[in-house]
Image (cartoon, rainbow, N blue to C red; front, side, top):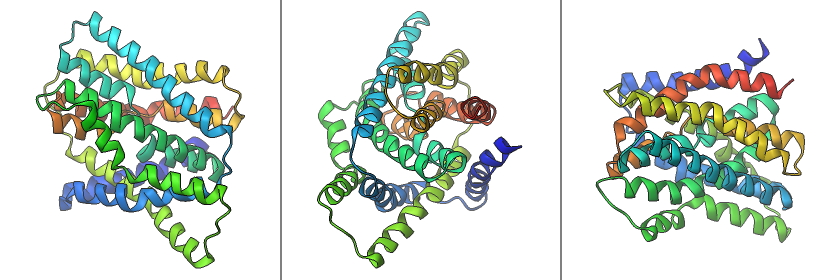
Amino acid sequence: MELISIIAPVLFIFLIGFIGQKCLSFDIKTISTAALYLMSPFLAFRTFYTNALDRTYLYIAAFAVLLLVILFIIVWFTADIMKASRSERSAMILGGVFMNSGNYGVPVVLFAFGSAAFDYGVIMMVFQSILMNSIGIFFASIGGEAHATWRDSMQRVIRMPLIYAAILGIIFQVSSIKLSESMMQGVDLIADASIPVVMLVLGMQLAMIVRKRVAYRYVTAVTIIRMIISPLIAVVILIFLPVDDLLKVVLIIQAAMPGSANTTMFAVQFGTEPDLVSFTTLTTTLISLLTIPIVLYFVMM
């Protein structure tokens, strides 16, 4: 019953976004852009501003990179065994390597473990966003019809306000620069609004994913990697990282998240098997309704 109470608010907001999109047909890109460029930076700033700079940041970054590298290798060899084409391989990488740490993972850890876990989740979200908007875009581009270079990918990273907000938060925190109470209240209002908005956006994005004829064997392989192998790899990595138990729990939950909805946008933009990527996102998100409570059960034991 406790697990249901944790996941229920998340699913409720997803459902509201889904129904709203079906009934009212919002311009998802505009809402998503507002959340990414106007709201999420305040969330990142507040998290890095209010949390002391220590080795935790390094450990979370190391975890994110290690998980990405190991998953990439697994997906690459799986694609080789399945004789996937270049575009299919790139689509598998997008679906199997990058998790939905922001729209889904952060709210779940907040409802399950409170504000301290939420801060860890946001830090992981920032690092994951950097990786997804660089390496993710690169693989979307090389597997698609519209090719991009490393320079194109890095330019996209440079334009990410999350990075600058996080850096500014660190500078303010290290320099002991204090914001006025009224200014901090404004930051809190926008930061607090960002989470429900990105959750609504995910529900809207799921409403736009259409079930089409795709190579289901690739979807199955990526789903197994994303939903089962990824959290198991996270457990192994965390054996060797000297972090506290709460951070371990947060990172395992993040690793168990379904495929990121943003990878669908990358696939559409570059023509990298968008139907395969979007259906993988839908499949992993639906399966997560079963797997996330199971993961929560084990980490809360």
